[in-house]
Image (cartoon, rainbow, N blue to C red; front, top):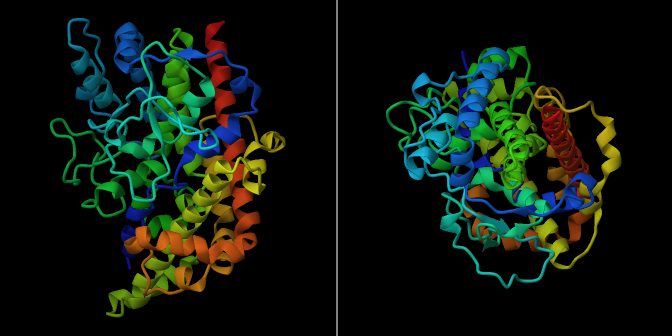
Length: 445
């Protein structure tokens, strides 16, 4: 048995970790002095920032790539043809396209001017913006995002910019970037090679290697499934974080907060145990056993494990998202909101560094995996989390309301576990932001 091949099918539907990040980020940052006390910033189209800082951006992106090649394990080097080379004569559209290529983001990335409204606020009076202008991913029927238009030059609170951007990488930034994706960028290749896990034919699944980090599975697992080590979450944190620092440094505060939010998204994804562990509800021995049975002609147990892990992830995400949104609309503070704001947790962790993503965030989430999986099994209706013949993902739109009704009498069962995870979410988000702000201040001296 060379590889745990069945795990390749486990992850495509799990690319989204926490549902909507923005409502949680509003709570996590609304009382952080560095955010709450920051002066309003002027909204700025991306093309204006790129034009104004083109030479500095070229230096920054080259420095990031050099650092990644030296320090990031399993880094896929950026092809030299994708370098961002200053050219004052090119059009704004060409400059924007060159920027996306240098970052190796999807050409369909929107990066529009918009806000996602805090669900605690009343219905906005400003014009709504069509979701297609914000995201390349079609929102599901249960989507909770509310997008409104933001005008160039409009004054906006950094909290709103930051919280809005914290959800944005799920809007298609990382779609079809691998050589074997049907819609992958053409000529030149982005250099990521073939998709390391997940089904390359499923568009949304191509995001997974940029939003997950299996850094702590152990030597045996890594030998059996070496492709799982090829994840690019740390790369995205480094890229967006460096751009935030540059933007703050050069007087483009709006993009400083916006890029910071993009970086934080990838940090926050790794606080979700199902994004830091290939199968938190199964031991390595069990994974090897069901895989062997499948190879011998009895695949039912293998497929059952795949379905159960997916169902539990979806149930956790649905329960957490609905709970957060319901509390926000009622302007109610419950255990999740208190955990997200709990700044006393921040000092429990070491200072921010780029190693923090792997060594602190992912390690903590991996360790929490078995308890989290067990809490979902105990706290959710058995139909959703213990029946391997029931595929929640295939029926999510219809089953969401049923799950909400079924959970009403069992909310306490999952409350403590989810609150603890969101305490991690808030603390790591604030620590990462402090680190980026500190770097910007140090560069200014």
